Image 1 (cartoon, rainbow, N blue to C red):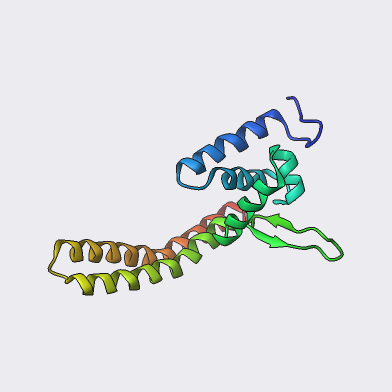
Image 2 (cartoon, rainbow, N blue to C red; image 1 turned 180 degrees about the vertical axis):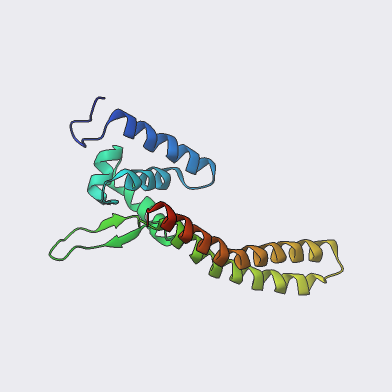
Length: 163
């Protein structure tokens, strides 16, 4: 399969990056952030500099800057600097989805608290108050299920030898 002379990536890898980025964008992620994220996923060590990302994606450094800022903010990417280097690396964690889901527990708790305030302000007997209560209860349920699901995931990974 043909490889890009500048980046070394195959046509199939480039197609995957663009396809997965479209899937992520369809789910609500900003388009450039989705492309950067997919590009980091396919990097062998899960890391690239902003310059490398701009080269691989054939975009401006400014576009990469905004995208990595978003990805760091939502904790899908971490920014690191290797000792002695002047440039930052952007990296996806190998256990990215586990970490991301567990971090969402705190976010769900914050939402639950805010929804409870809204429910109290509207009154639990109103349709709007009940809607907020249902949403709060759903988030509470999800948050309660996360630890069991994550333990099940760890057991599955251990049984398949992919830990």
